[in-house]
Length: 94
Image 1 (cartoon, rainbow, N blue to C red):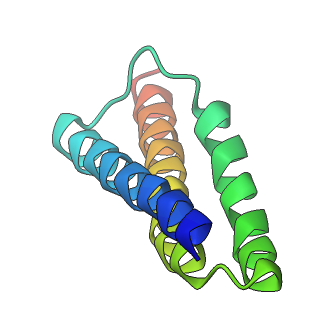
Image 2 (cartoon, one colour):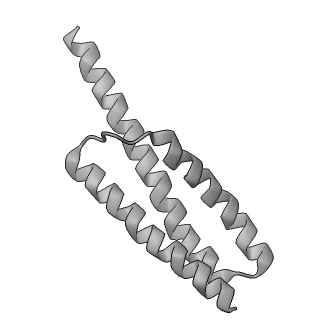
Image 3 (cartoon, rainbow, N blue to C red):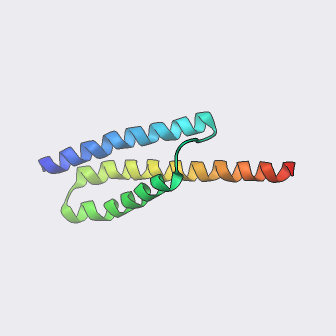
């Protein structure tokens, strides 16, 4: 139980940071200096954790992992949408 709480706390703090990145992405409307596939990888790992944690009975980790995984997925989708908009605008000006 204590191991689940510690791991879940890391997941929860990570979720706060990831969602803060999402908010910043929305504010800035651009992303620089970040290779988006890295976050996509961690989002995929998060999806795996949503299967893995319940098999271990780690429900606090699972709950915080849902929020963390959702934040990573939202950020990746946000970056891909911004890239698509940027590419569409470049196509309009050429």
